Length: 145
Image (cartoon, rainbow, N blue to C red; front, side, top):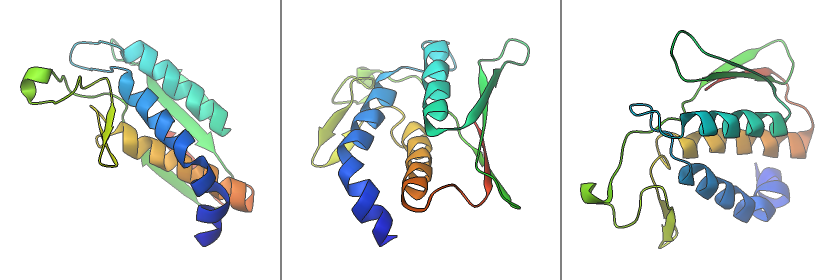
């Protein structure tokens, strides 16, 4: 893990943080539909930049589902994510606009930062860091978003 931190994660920390802020700035409220199409495009584009093969599809009137695959090997890891969030308003107790991320005392405050855009991006950053340090993944990873 030290090689990942020293050679990839530390030099890319600001890039990773800025990407998180961009993703959290994009509303993706499933209950109203606000921003769902734009967020699905952002997500599919990000997965392609990672090197994943992607498919986007809908079921009935659903918002886009994104299926991505990266890596090869005898084992498969399935990761389920979601890029939608619940509605949020400043009146709900936010000190900032929930879709205008702020960093205060080293913490990011934004809708979706912990559920689930931050977790989703962390997984992609981990795959990126692993590939940068060791080459290709030793297993197949399926990502469903």
